[in-house]
Length: 109
Image 1 (cartoon, rainbow, N blue to C red):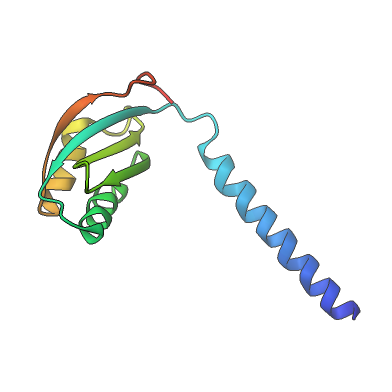
Image 2 (image 1 turned 90 degrees about the vertical axis):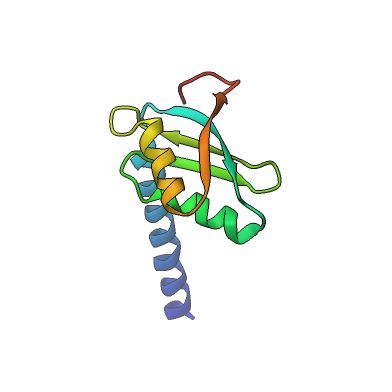
C-alpha cells in the first residue's frame, strides 16, 4: 500500500512540476496576435499542417487554425518573428496565406 501511495505521489509531483514549467516559460513574454487568411484548406488534416508549419519557427507562442473559415490566428514574439516569415512557413506547407486583420483584442498578448 505504501509503495502504491509513494508512486502516486511521485507521479503527482512530476505532473505539477512539468505543468508549472510549461506555464512558467510563457510568463512575461510579450507577443502579438495576427489573423491570417489561408486558402486551400479542405479538411482537418490541412488545419493540422497549417498549424504545425509556423509552430516550427522560433518565436511562435500559440496558434489556432479553422479550415472551414479559412483562417489561422497566430500569437508570436515580434522580436523574433514577423508576419512575412509566418506566411512563408504556411506557403511552404502548400497553402496560400495573407494577413487578414489585426486581432480585435489588440495587438499584444
